[in-house]
Length: 274
Length: 306
Image (cartoon, rainbow over all chains, first blue to last red; front, side, top):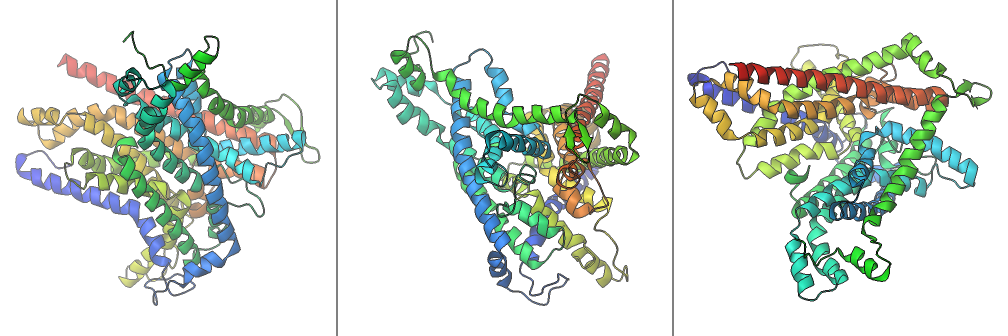
């Protein structure tokens, strides 16, 4: 911020912009560097690079821990999103449309997973799964359903938030008009309400998918041999070294998530919901 | 209003079939049960375990004892871990707030058609995940990393400077992780402060610095409190960044908690650690917000008195 005085005001503007630019670059620096070194034509990263190659991407996909991690993360995120968005949207609909006693409390409860730290929730689920395994004789750790049930927790708060927001802004006169013109309640819901909820549902799905796909803390103790999510596989690898192979894996994740964000921005302006 | 025909579809359909019972509110049940069964119940179980006794041979003995909590607060190592965590979290929160303000201000006041693209650009690093960003910092800060390469090339140093596995690296990484949250929170608050308020102050002769200190800052304090709370919580619970950038020697609470389960398998103590982490986060956030809110209150009184 500049010293007071109208003459120096332009200097203040300039300084403000300069600081903002630096902060912006600072946020992007790690993302940029991961993408850059994934193209280095050398095993051990050093600057400046000897040359450039795409070979590490093939190498990354041929490594079983990343290929399998990718598949696991994708499966978990997809299934958790379908379950979480269905349940979360139904809950949001009930809470916004029927202001029943205790709906505020339930809303808070459903946002609960945002409040509990991921590492604590993951630990709690871990001891819970062990107890369930002993009691029910069904495996939960290192299974797809164990991971999915945990990740549904990540998707519910986002869905409730996004779908509630889209429902609150919804013009009920449209539904009333449809009903007055003779549409049955089910038709009103299917032909009027649901289409109007669509942007919220799409945004909720994409955000839920991203939240699940990139989640590390909740999964840490729930993964096991043969069922490791991509972020956990990346963490395990990075604890020993950083090389172009892991950078290629990370870059693929960056590209996938970037693409999902751009798609969701077409449905709901991200600047309005985050 | 009273004649509203549209009872929401599913509720109405059910009302016709059932005996005056609306199924509509019941739609909330599946999600609620899921959260209770897979968050509520596990948390309750974890708390129960924190009162158990640990035995290296028998693993866990049913008991109701506070010894795990007492052990934490009497063990200098764990007090140190908590101290490090709080210091890093507080420092990162302050740095992130200072760094976020200019960006948030420009974004909030921007009328450019690139504004929504810029907002996406702020959200984007947040979405790519902490592990990916930690990898980026590793490429920058390692002995053969970009920063050392530049330092050596310019001749400032001849031997690589140790940047990785230092508190500095952890702080850098965490600040980058939490900045987007702070920027977005502050941006929405600054947007709600009318531009005319600033202009009025400026027209009455206040310089930019005075406008900032006497108008913008007090009015955006709620945003600073909200963003600061969120960011502080995230810092307290950071896992990937301290593990990857701090190395095995640098211990914060979340990695220490993980170790108790994955390496030491002392569940009762690990469980106690989890609740100490959450309780200390909650208490410190309450203290912080109360102090800031009181300050805001005093300022209002001062302003009214003038």
